[in-house]
Length: 239
Image 1 (cartoon, rainbow, N blue to C red):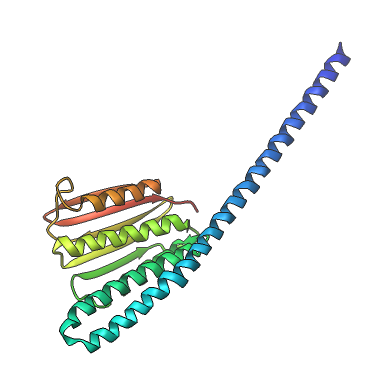
Image 2 (image 1 turned 180 degrees about the horizontal axis):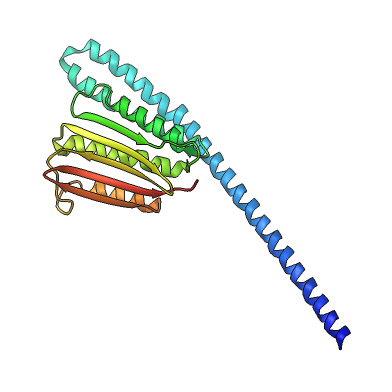
């Protein structure tokens, strides 16, 4: 009886060992598969970034140069040509930011903060009004954002600022990036006339923002009234 029990225990131990090694092997296979997929996605992003730079980027640069020449040659259309040139330059800047992000496997929060601040400075280069205030708290090299999250946050900022300039009649815009693990907060606010989110022409832009935030697994809080408008985006991050 004792021998039978020992034999059964031995068989059970062997089966458990086999099950453990099988599970370990499957886990390793999943890790290898995941790494392969990530490398493939990075390769595709890198290829897309190169195509954007060599194709659309070079074409936009050529258009800007031609518009500069035309604005000097034709005084009667100078104002419209300069506006078109500025619009094309902004588009080229958005493209450059996208290419920079696509070329990264990961973006640290401090890298993203510097890039976002640089984007805002470029955007405000010729803007005298409204006033821009920028603040970043706790920039960190130890917290990484995926390229997708970095793109979403950049586009959210662009969309919000475009709406403020177009509709808010504000004389001040504040952009804050608060890095507080396990989350980061992007806050964009103004001291304009405010709006009703349910009735305003902001609707489509806000829906785009909410979709971007949902794709990041975050939340969006909006407050608006005669004090102005504040948009706060909260995104989970890992250290």
